[in-house]
Length: 115
Image (cartoon, rainbow, N blue to C red; front, top):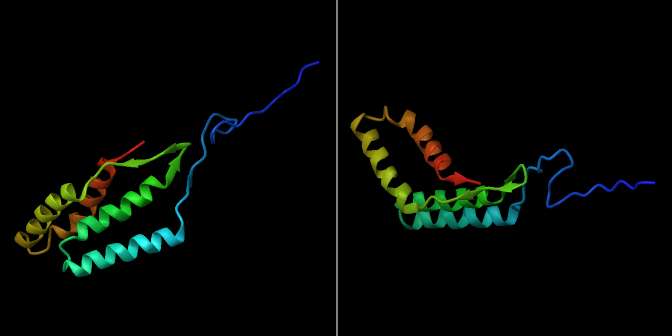
């Protein structure tokens, strides 16, 4: 006579794939958003890249995909350098570059997001 035992180890399902979920809370999100808004307003927008990085890091580091938690290694200083470059390009092109601004920001975020 044999006994079958199913074991679920650290979020790994029986089919070998881990679970995907987000474990951040509403109160945390509201807190980080308020801090980001205050920093942006008090610095007249100069520290907006810092607020973006802070909130994006919170979102990424509370995301688990296939049982693997994501990590974000971008810094506000890195984003600030790009931010200045992108806004100068927007000014030079009379706003035309702004159509690429969202894409450039997403590319930067993905470049610094890892498992």
